[in-house]
Length: 266
Image (tube, rainbow, N blue to C red; front, top):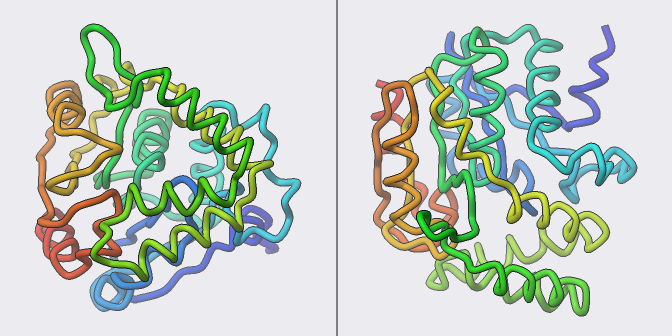
């Protein structure tokens, strides 16, 4: 059988073990953001790695349809389709950033596919409201969109330096290259999907056990968001803080990140 979905998403299975972990990267990245943790995770678990259709690692750029992917539900459907094609059930989903909420939506649609969710630096809403602190004012986000449209490559470098721990220059450069490879024609509409979305209502439908993994200081996801998610998730949830700064603990503090993940997996 030809795995159409798997091929289009660069899916690959590595490691060994009865339990499958699904590793899903976030905005602007690709599956290589997990490269520091794959060797150790693969010693104990079977791992499914893949690239979302927006990733610069995807050769067929036409797979990203800005209209279709203007909501996370389309990504959740892609995830479900991939797991169905590979005949994988009862997986542990490890989703970074935007993928965290995609995993939540998929788990609500198909609870049989997921036994646990590990959400890394995830947020249901990024823009502030009177009764909600998401981390960004709408004016800042609008200015960011304008910067992306005016000089996308310069924005990529600046954004990477802002969201990755600056004490780890190789990781900053890695994200900047991934963002540039994604391109403005995908990066801008996807940024609007991510930063203008509101998935807070999904949280009280999530019944799978959840571990929220965050860093001690993340400019993208402030502590208020972590507290909000912890209080709203319907199922059992726990919060783990990795002792690093920035939005990418799997890159900048991978050993401590692994400790947190292994503890969450029991």
